[in-house]
Image (cartoon, rainbow, N blue to C red; front, side):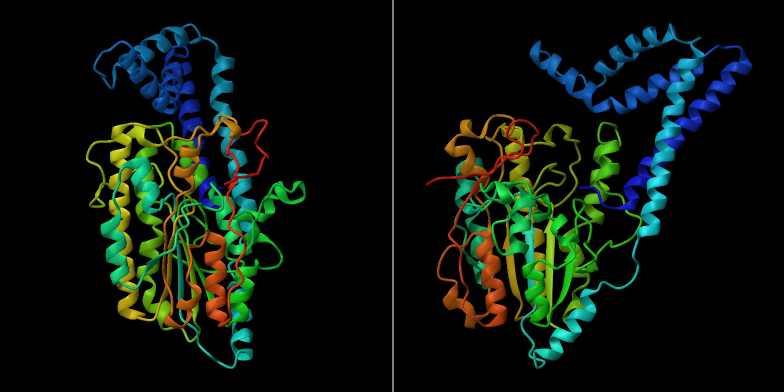
Length: 480
């Protein structure tokens, strides 16, 4: 899912630095007569640097298995001594040392080449959607519809799913949002369990993948790939036809798709995203980098910051935001403050009281952020049309590596639960008379904008898995 050239820049800088330092140390070792001692130490430090997460988690497991209190750096000390003993044997293996440090320079050279290609292909011209929208608004007779804010809160379950799976009572938040004009229209049965499928279906206004083998493996129907197609997806095309300017508020997970959107937030050529994150994830820098990027690429903050520009537009606007929280890793507490104690073990849906508590804190923080964003929108845009929606729920009980046929009903219910709060214009309320899945919510939104009765699809839930293997291309409809 890495899109930004800045990802390549991060890999380039890190690998180049490692390779250069290694070659400098090799030359110093040759001049001082110390053999490859300096190089051996450097290679060991590099190995420990990138093995940080594995050593930490492995030593934690050993201590817990032995019933001992965990000592964070004990594992590093043991591994350092062992590796030092092994690598000492290779201190005179000059060719091996040369090959090891050259590998870093080779990786840097490849990143530099890819970075140059990305720079040459980067299109800094205004997105084509702007001109298309100008034509569309002229054809529509100048009628201005409500500004639409469609915000995805990644992994935010519905009230029932939160209560059953995590023991979280979200009634107070839903009640506060009701006072702001929102209604809860979640079916608690998400159309899909995976983000790319859910978001792709929202933009397609239809089921992106089904059991039909003809469309099951069409990756181009998934988000964000469908936004690279030659023709805009149906949701965007219909907003354009209604005279809307389209805006995108991105997160660390997905860059702004400039082809059909104007960009909020960090829509720059150089930005760090998932390739750099993956590169540094096993190192001590992995979590601090997530903190920094989590603050910098905050979809809700980007919307609030650019509200004056959005609300002063002569065209109505459609804003699509994808906010990564409350999806793990859980970085902030219930007051949206960074944890004072590092919590590296919370990067996945690992069951346990500590992780459930961190998820509760994440939900609480998102609630605060959402209320701030909504209040900011309503101050400048009191007639705003707002959707706050989860793409799926949590996954504490779901084992993605097991066959779909073995998944329990409770684990699917947990993952399929999703938030769906809608604040719609009064003249569309008559069409908001039932719970809606994500696809039918999008159909309701565009039908309301077009002032026509929505045509809803049958509500379905499709199951598929993230992992490669026999079921990597399986899409299976869940029965009642």
